[in-house]
Image (tube, rainbow, N blue to C red):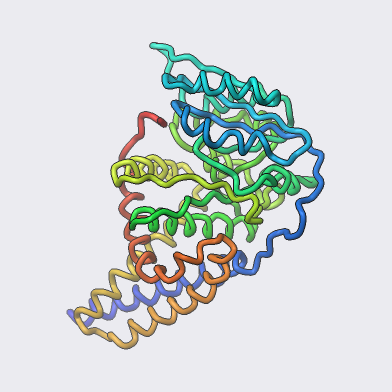
Amino acid sequence: METYVQNALFILFQLCFIVQLYYLISRHTRLAGYKPAEGPPPEVLIPVSVIISARNEAQNLQQNLPAILEQNYPDFEVVVINDCSYDRSDEVLEELEKQYAHLKVVTITEHDRFKTGKKFALTLGIKASKNEYLLFTDADCSPASENWISRMMANFSTGVEIVLGYSPYTKRRGFLNAFTRFETIKTAISYLSSALVGDPYMGIGRNLAYTKTLFFSEKGFASHMHVLSGDDDLFVNQHATSNNTVIELNPETFVYTEAKTSFKAWFRQKKRHMGVGKLYKNQHRRMLSFDAISGFIFYILLILFLILRYEPVLALGLCIFRMILQLAIYNRIFKKLEAKSLYWYFPLFDIIYYMYLNVFGTIGTFLKTKQWK
């Protein structure tokens, strides 16, 4: 009986190994081979509205908004929704309005009987915007260059309605910062690779563009307005297709933000994000679940076999083969995403990553988030 169980577990281990290879070879290699547009920024004349929802972000607005308002682009406006802020946000925005004529502020005031969320704020901002093309980011974000808008807008050719960008965290000291940046890269590898194989399933609201026509023709966030999060990934999940979605990975389009500095703040953020995944399309939930569960079981069984000394050479050999393949593929991806400093942490962080995915995936299934700020 003991031998039967061990053999069954080893077969499961090999199946998980095969599943992991499938994701690496069929999807992630596409991102490794992807070449972002290079050379000078293209001349684009598409009018665009940059949409930013901000709640109690006075300091971030003062620090980051000028870099967005001073983009090297001929025709754009910046719409900031001041969503029930009770800090100095109104004063900061009032001063910036005096300096920048293309800044438009939409103010939402708190109401005792009517609680608003980010989706409501964004909807008001989109309605207030004057242009067809919309580019989204957050108040705590800063673009890597003055060519962010021009390179993102250059992707809107015939039929394109959604452009997925990349938004990394700024490098700081400490384990939490390093792992947060690693997790962001792994998430990006997943959703960018899926978009390249014609199966887009999410985007990041810190760096995302789509058309106003798409937003209103699909009734905006109406189908998931009752869900606190998901203004970015749920919208993309519902409306992105192989024909209307492209990605942009020129380093000039990266939008940087600061990672959480405490485990409490990080836990709250991740709990909120993980709770949205259960509302993805069935095919995408299955795809993400197979990756998360197979990676988790692979490492758990590997440790078990090494402790029990059951086929330790073969088990370790499969792990090393997978790791070498990962490092070979991810070497090019980490360079593209300007995260080479994390590359050598990969073996350790990959194990932690799959543990984290399953823990927070389970937590997100049962818990609800009650506020976005």
